[in-house]
Image (spheres, rainbow over the protein chains, first blue to last red):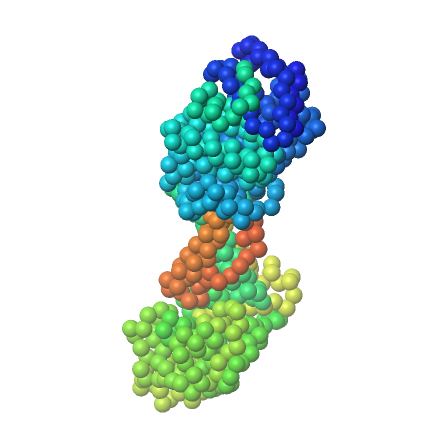
Length: 208
Length: 402
């Protein structure tokens, strides 16, 4: 499903990282491991279509990502890739449900309220649907951001250090949530982390 | 959930800044609305009331005052002229129509105008009910007078001396309402019309009353009147006739067109100043909206990066920011138009002279320009902040901890 070939990126400071080739099949779960500063986030951004690599190609479902025009690329990302960041990055002025609907609106797909509510209840935060981000705890916020990543039923779910700011209980819950939700939604999953707590859930690893 | 909701929620989050910006826009638009409405109505009134009047002849004094008192019934008359002189002038071959006026009394602030039947011809008056005045002390009243003073046909009332106030009431004679005019949309709505004889009769000493039996024309010859409204037979008279009046008689001639123009040039400075003041406020509003949006961009960068990440194009987000500015100016403009209309209606209700009363229940075409100005201000103020969208590096913004 995803193929990266002869990928390399030059940083502005002149540092260059060369990424080994990687092939991810449909619905596979992968860990992206590496020490901090090894380029995990860079690679994720490149796969997500947020950062153009200096060299090499990224194929998602036979689409050569960086040959798409900017507008199509935004649309492609919105429809096919769900991203969970280290920080939840929710829109503070919108409530939880609106934050989910925003994902559909921005990707230009119809709003599916039933699906959104189902996601929230599966993640155990259905009662928070009308609350604003400021009223939620860290763990709840991270769940909302997982739900938002799944709103458009993506084929690929990417998580960048999703557990780093969570305690053990929440970290375990979020990791489990990501794997079960990826499975339930038929999506491939890539988690970038240096957190040992995550490792026991996923066997396939890509080391940087 | 739509893009309008995102925008309005964002504005609601910055309540105070939004409120300030809306107030600034509303204030600027409000002042301009009042100016446009007032200028339009005053211009209309001046034009309508002086429509068929080429010249006013009255006692020497300020020509503007003569026009104001005889056509617009606002100011005090300049004095009286001998009726005999006036009568001679009215028969001049250059004059097509001449209407004598005898002013001096009022009822509840509505002026009682002594005149003759040529007055109805000049203003094209028609009756809603009853008849025109025929005998002394019979009156025909304007529509507004009938409504506000609650006078009906057959009612009687006493006039008071002077053009305003009701302290000095002429108790010896009562007027009888014989007819009510249709709404004319001009000054005659606010007038009480009677014959010149009535005005004389009211002002005679009580003991002379029984001697009074002469015909009307003879009466005029012995007495004084206030002024004459004149319509020329040909436009050529514009040059000759006023000069003739001013040089060869003891009266003065004033042209409504010239005096209105002079009046406008006098108040024009004030109107212009106010107009520039309003434009300045609109400018400050634009600047304030610009600053709030620009400052908010630092914080909003994360939101916008998230939206990009969720699949929004740069162009979509550009519009989202412009929409913020537009929403503020749209609300401000609507509020400003409302304020302008309500304020003018309030001003109108506090105005003493009913003749020049302004109303907020009007819509003028210039208001469309105001709406366009509001729209333009919103776009202009949000353009630079919105262009920032194109510079945001999503990957970097989102990867760095907040």
